[in-house]
Image 1: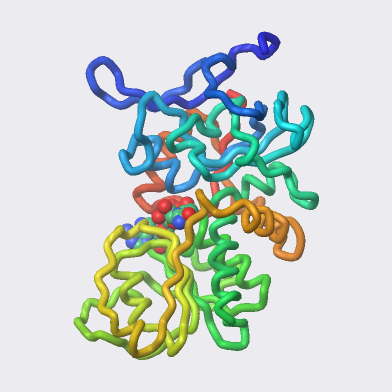
Image 2: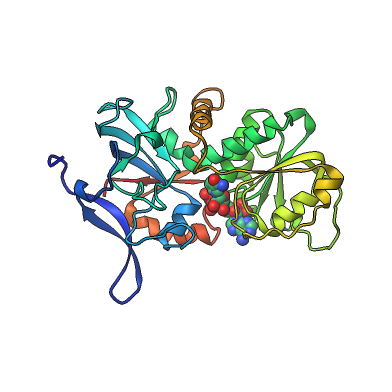
Length: 334
Ligand SMILES: NC(=O)c1ccc[n+]([C@@H]2O[C@H](COP(=O)([O-])OP(=O)(O)OC[C@H]3O[C@@H](n4cnc5c(N)ncnc54)[C@H](OP(=O)(O)O)[C@@H]3O)[C@@H](O)[C@H]2O)c1
């Protein structure tokens, strides 16, 4: 242990004046919480939940000081679990990492063995973090639509928050699987990016933000992936075709859902909730395997930004203001 030199992490803490600080600090391996697997983190990523954690949002972070970062990938350095040996390449996404527990914005993390996933054959560390929780969540949404029995022949799937991490990866996955995709975005200047990902039609946020009190709207889609919630999700519910399915995973536009029961009882709509943090291990392993094999996404590199710990707070602010595009990798070497 003592061979590991002090290292950097991004720490969120309250100063003596009560002001919040999110800054790079030097810590030692003894500062890490207990756990079976010590990992030298090669890369992390920025997700919406991380952006909230950087601002100590009470819905994400219960205790300060706190190290954010719900994703990390790297190499095992020490392990008391027989499932992992020093040198193994691994990733951790979700669970309590980066919310109630020391996260991936740190050169080293210590994790419970049951949180650790062996890097699947077919994925590099970089590819795994380009996906991260966002890609994992997008894959869960696509799987939910498939399990509902909706295939590409049933027409377009609509994806909201299209330029975001989950949205952009959902478009890429759906397109790879042969679906036509309508991308809903507040950034019309990113139409080319969305088309390159595989979107076949671009819609504005206003196109999916009905403010009438009509209990049902003309049927437009059999399937939707919603990352934004609020009135957008309410509009989608009223716009789905008979027996359609919505995979709801996000709240970028708001956590409220103003709806009636009519879409459910008159059109048989299914609203499927997607949670990635506590996804059961068997399903988790299956999803990572798919993402490394038949759902492997190529060409994500030029849509990926890369930043240092010191750049995270500013980027997190942009993300919460809805201004970022695609995925952001976080380097762990300052
Ligand atoms: N359930 C889970 O397990 C899970 C896992 C991952 C993420 N999430 C949630 O999914 C959402 C997306 O996460 P992410 O990491 O992809 O974040 P992100 O990269 O910031 O993407 C969010 C996107 O939503 C759109 N948006 C932002 N503000 C909006 C507003 N006020 N109204 C309508 N659209 C808005 C923007 O896309 P456009 O400009 O293109 O419209 C933005 O890029 C977040 O709410 C996050 O908490 C949930």
